[in-house]
Length: 114
Image (tube, rainbow, N blue to C red; front, side, top):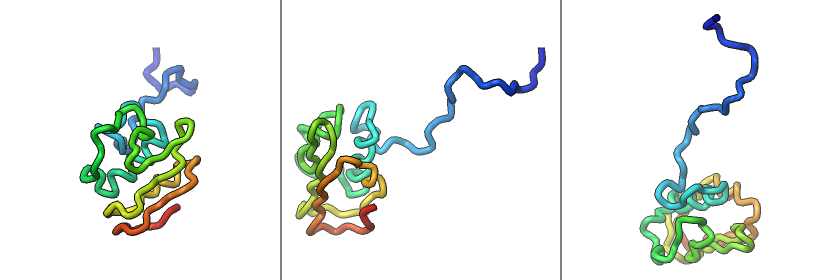
């Protein structure tokens, strides 16, 4: 038997770990892409200081009613207007393919909406 690598494709899935930690670590269990995007908003805008988190569940950001609105399990609106939020608008916000409305008026935010 040879120790040389085979040119044949492997039947095993790639074991390469993700290069970036989850934005939802400690917030959402088994996050979807839209969960990751909303968690990025939360983390980049000092989310741990926000009020009304006691009712948030760890199954989906759609339970985060203080600023997220969902229809049929899809994030359609981010309502952060006049909530004294500060930080940076993350590029991940562009991953919210069902997003129809963003209200960020009256806050101290930097960055652009992709």
